[in-house]
Image 1 (spheres, rainbow, N blue to C red):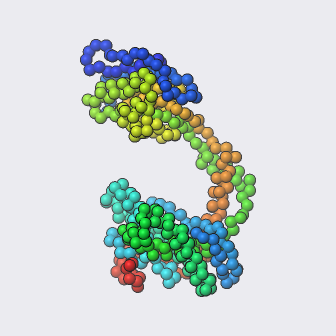
Image 2 (cartoon, rainbow, N blue to C red):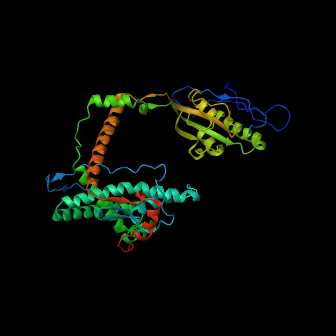
Image 3 (tube, helix red, strand yellow):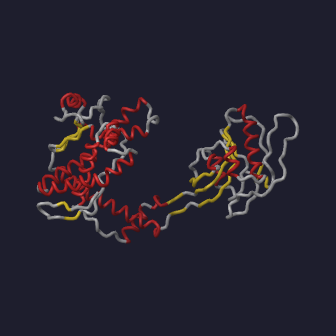
Length: 419
């Protein structure tokens, strides 16, 4: 990419004869203080375009232990595809999705989180894929709910009834004092009735969500009191993890930049596009602030922000020519007009960072936290596996297609629909 320094952008002319030239080039007024500014321009080609609360959970065996720190239950990762299909008509909140000992998980227990995700992505999921997306979300969220039920069943079996009643009271108070207010704010409503109505819109109720939160907190505390949180993470362990996962701490070159962009709508509009981008570039060369020109003339996504683009990693842009320019231009210098066949650009790099690796001293805090989280997760998995061995667990995804058809007609909880 060559640029003629100190020259204005030359505009195409629809009539034969010499091309008009804007003279009187002045230094840029909004240059980066890190580098000297040089005006760059070139002659535009005229050819045709190319195509919870802390509490103590007592047990009968180990005594009371403070549950001041609790592991998060298993995160809900995205499944590549459901292991089995469920009926398209799965919208009845009383359908039994899983049984854990004598407890059941209903479709209604999953509908809030599932429907929230579907609403946030409304219009992004093709209609023909909506049923598959719903099935994936249902199965994805069923596993952590089964874990919660397992831990709750174990807690109710081990904790004396009187003590459990006190725990449930504290959890209920915590919901009312803390979570309820958060829910009101998140839903942007003012009253309990309005919040319940919002939840019913997603297929659940306020009381159901309160119960779900209380069970989740009880499960987290019950599992958490059996986990060792204070195991030391040594320097040698952190260093070994850093070397083993060094690729995670590599970062590419990146640039912060600004752009003026004009789209090429069709081959017949090429000359007009060149004229528009040239006039914009000459305005900047003439002393008009870059941001002001971008707001007026740019068709880029950040035009309203004066064409400012945030840090961009090398190789991340769809336009190869634009990407190359960002990492070849001197900082603070206007680029030539860049033609990537879809759009025309004039860009200026504000700041640039070279590729590198985060030093161990900077990465060790993150590494220590990762090791700690992995240990907690491993202990929680082991505890839940032992609990699971003591209880009967069934989910609708464990069944064959023939069995599911039978279950769909017969396996319903002996409860009334939510009120």
